Length: 234
Image 1 (cartoon, rainbow, N blue to C red):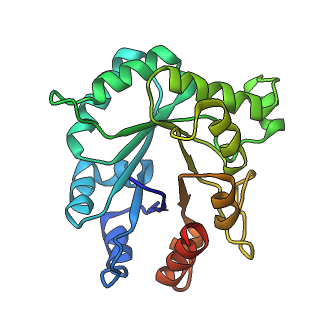
Image 2 (cartoon, rainbow, N blue to C red):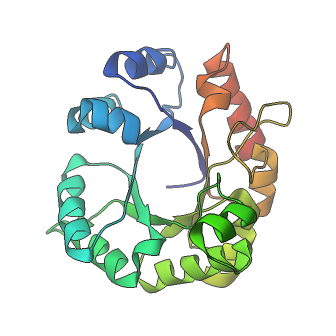
């Protein structure tokens, strides 16, 4: 898969997400979509199958984090959903990430891409230190988590676009960076703290940007999606 814009379809129901995706029916390029906890917990695996059957690539964003054996078994289930990308928390340790990779790999050797969340883009230095008792600079923490994900055999990480270049330097250009926290220059940052525009994310080397409210909350979501593509890919 090449560089792309992933739309975060953070909707509470099947009806709402399908109504949203219907707006893109005339688009030559089927949007790559993210299905997160809210929609997955509301509708279950069937919504993944339905959206996949419509021709969309899917990033299943469930951020698994548990003991290695539990995560391995959960990933074994998710491997049957034919998603393109899924994730877990790097903080679960190398052992957990390796177990996840084992569970995600099908008997024929194929699997979705697997990436690790480093630090959420709603986390800043102050909250990391005060809430998590991690005293190192956030850039150093993200770099370390990325290196551990690479050591475990994962394909990349979720990080702020601000850390994408640092991850590439530490782990190689082929190591994927999937970056939420992307907003238009004239948009609201909401609860995100480490943000960039699509053009800045492109310049710094992000492979995929995840964009939610600037597209899903726009008066014209199709136009907002096209704007994202133009700023990030052109």
